[in-house]
Image (tube, rainbow, N blue to C red; front, side, top):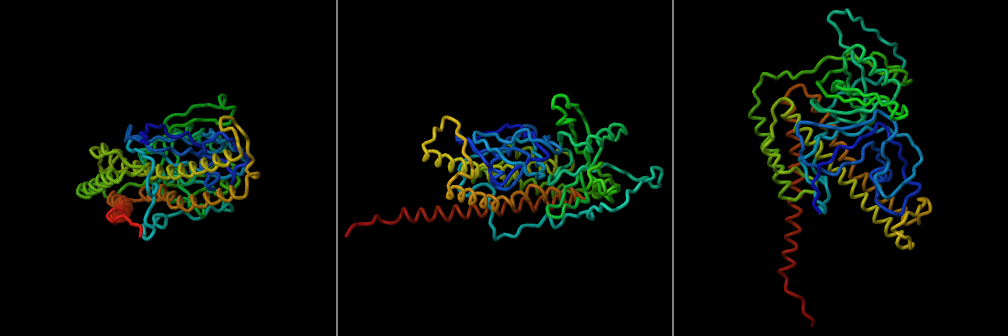
Length: 452
């Protein structure tokens, strides 16, 4: 089947509550993304998108909730009722997609790579602030100090890479962030910084994008005060976080963090890098052509080639980075869909064996499933974890490194390494296809066996 997508990015959530396994499910079945995430052990606030086409390549839309209730735990016909186990997850940004097409039935599945290749460790190259110290006294900054210090609110949004010129919608409900929005409206700054967190230590990145509040809607009446504001933002720049001022509020959640920051600008703005930019565009175009030739299950459409640019600014390299991030996110979603289909088939087979009416809802307790069915769930869960772990990091840390770069030249190099990894993956796939096609041809050339 061919799926041409013009999807709207999911409205997503700051916190989602999931459990390691569902407690109950319906027999009228479709394994939902939430159910899949519960089985895979990966909590997520966004229903994973399928794949996409380029509707407006220069815009980047994604909706998230800064904590709280998910708007949709199941998009399914398999309903899973789960105990609340608090896990914090922030959704990845979704570049408004039109540059992709998804085809079902890839031989090696989306996102498969040659495990023998050593790829760049982007996470190791990121710089981080010292751990927050809840015992540190709150520092007061003198507004009349010379030179003047820039102090901005800090709103960490988990493992999410936001890039300049992108647009985002956040749903705000936590009291401390309600206060933050009131403050930035009152003082007129309308700005705050959004650093990523280290996946193991929780330390905040030392370079972060700056969100600018463009629109705020009060929705407390419509949501029974579950959500206070729906806020639209644009990422207008980057800053280096020099130090945090009030670490103690992070642990007791009494207020929001504040930090002294400095604007981060590229130091090579006057340097002519058109040759390097042109070479990168050619590599990007070559990758698109190879994806098409190989029939990649998630790939860019060829009409994107004529719009490519790696120049400075919104419609140049930052746009390419956003599109590439969406490609990787959609590969991860396709991998999740594979797990969903496997779970769906497993449950369907079991219920058919039990003589269940597949046209009506029948609740099945997970703990009541036979041991072999539960064991198969465990196997699927482990397989998905192993295959998706690296893919998750690919959607985050290379792009955080792009934000951290202090020159356009360095950013071109980083993105070039990202393309090189894709080239290696495609080359490995070509080699595998040649191997299998050669074996099939040899088999066809063999004379038929005769009976003695």
